[in-house]
Image (cartoon, rainbow, N blue to C red):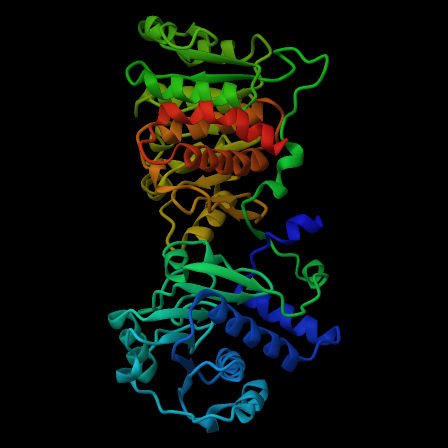
Length: 488
């Protein structure tokens, strides 16, 4: 793993615990780790707010210990600080107890009535490792934060949020800022956790970066450092075929979907794009961009013949194809070609009654790009989005890109990336077709499927961010040239 990729690692709760233990084994005292964590929280409060009363809510574990440290620093800097402890002093142990003993102020019993809009609340009740819903005094404090909406800074994650899934275990407060340590966790990127965390600051607490080699994490925040080096680059001596030839299987009625995909593919770097369509729709496809090649075919055997000609080396099937027997047969023909395949939309839905049949044909490099509804119909897997995508990739043998505002890209070998740059304006008709085309274009140009899917999702989000409000799908492809120039 490159040093740059290290910065985009996401650690599970278990992996973060191991990183702390490995840091101690490497000679970093655990008390020093907590001291740096708590000071980082205090500095975040000082950086983001004007001086006013602070109420630190401390739990009985190490998260509460961080809170005691933060309270001590804020008080030493002249801030008015109150501190409430859940469970009492007798529940504390280890480093949390040591830092409680260093606190020279009063320790208050939990009292939700003390929470109002005039204080800054530091939520140090529970961290990402919580495994059950909050109850009793903890739930009452969090409910007061939610009802009265004071400024809120969360330590690690808002209390009650599962650090691995981004799902609240019952109730969790909405924080304005979250301070976490060493590396982010999946909950900081997955919804609804991302929204509950607010802005996230990662504090260096002295954990040696080398511990990541021992942990070998498999989850990443999707970022160009993961795949930019494998982006296709035009070279002197290239010609259109050497840059890749993507075949897109178009439908007979919703012809705009394949044409949107073709534009995305050509902008992404494919040297040639062929639109392969039913004969009755050929005239419609010819009215699109003149740079597209258009060929018609009668049935799946004829499609298979076309896919074997003219040095076509990647296939996209599904956009606007319709949920028909023809689409099923065409999708199998695409998979049988042996080319890298991107299957989107109807190419997935048409197999919802027999997904195993689809998976049995996946023998080479394939990307599946379902949105949540398509995913549920095809896979029927419960759980959080990260684990669902991973399980789907392992089941199907394909790279699975589970679309959404927190798109997850999962490889059958267990690697996964979470995308975080997609703006809400992407929720518009046709944007998924452009995404499928970008991925297909990158695959045609020689990019490995997992990298192509990760790059496609990030570039797609960056293009949408450039347009902003008023975005329609037709805007996206034309934003790619400056983005690709910056990446290269």
